[in-house]
Length: 100
Length: 147
Image 1 (cartoon, helix red, strand yellow):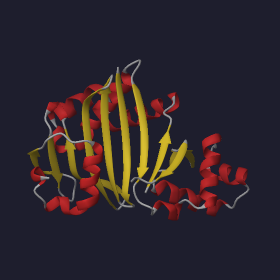
Image 2 (cartoon, rainbow over the protein chains, first blue to last red; image 1 turned 90 degrees about the horizontal axis):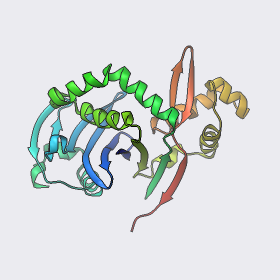
Image 3 (cartoon, one colour; image 1 turned 90 degrees about the vertical axis):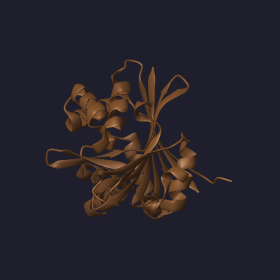
């Protein structure tokens, strides 16, 4: 049985962290944490951590929401990622994410 | 400080979610294709694929949670708007005009309040013909402080 938990965490009025986690029983099989910023009426992805196809990685997007770069990353929990987002916010775009 | 909002996902919500996914991706098969082949250019595809796969399962489930990790939301949660949210939680309305009439409130003020609540994802305004039908996205609201 697949159970999906979807979170939207508002960090500011125009900044959110969207989380999607999928569980089989108690085992987490998928996670994605997407930090989005609002431009006009659209929520543009800025940084995204996920384990799609079983690989933990972090993606960075440009101002149009197009993939800019990708680095490997170790698995973290939602509270950890929220802490990063709240601490660094838009500065995440210029930081070495693999080191965080 | 955290304001946590929960929404029970009922059968009608599952049908609505599925309709939204169909509108975005046409079919589950085409989404699967996109998620595995073109995923790099679309961060939404993987999330939607995981969600749709769970919704298709007979015993699959979805939980929706919204957390406001900022006190700014209290600028929006005025007593009138909280009352409006509470009414929408317990009652279905056909349109904004219907809601205003049932609350005995002015149409424009009701509309302005709904737009303010929609900006924080607390209600959604679903277009149905000429009308916009307000739907509460909240079934409970809890305020807490973390140590």
